[in-house]
Length: 204
Image 1: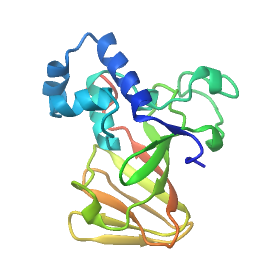
Image 2 (image 1 turned 90 degrees about the vertical axis):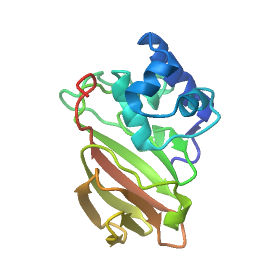
Image 3 (image 1 turned 90 degrees about the horizontal axis):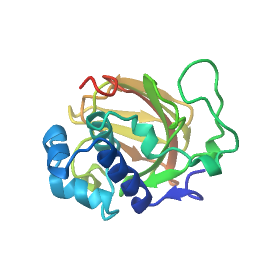
């Protein structure tokens, strides 16, 4: 569902750089606002490294944009025009959602083109099977809901607790507690995770 259509690191990096230029921020200013290393942001803009979801959330907030705008389906690829704000009813075909690959996950933000959202739905394929494959636990503001579409996963928390979920089982937790998703099935697991956005853009 994701793997036949992945955004390249260069595509996402170009969008990130354009957003920074639109806000008239230097790399140094953005680094100071986010706490991310200047070299990390620069490499991400050049498509030399991938970033995890929580780092994109921090960058998007500092740039006063929706995190989904970095992953939205280009207009020419959209099957139909969608509303630009999260008001009323809208639909989305998940097969049209481009993914972004990191060392641990492949994920795509659903309804990335909508603004004013209070939550970010994410379709993800879980590749990792050992927490040692991560540089650190993932932490971001808000709360998180996840349901397993296929396969099975373990959610390992920095507290030492681990949740095991099979297909169609779900969990709800505080995203601020460090966590990682691990596939425990023979095949890579597929999930939908919904993250609340915390503070809206511009209010950090």
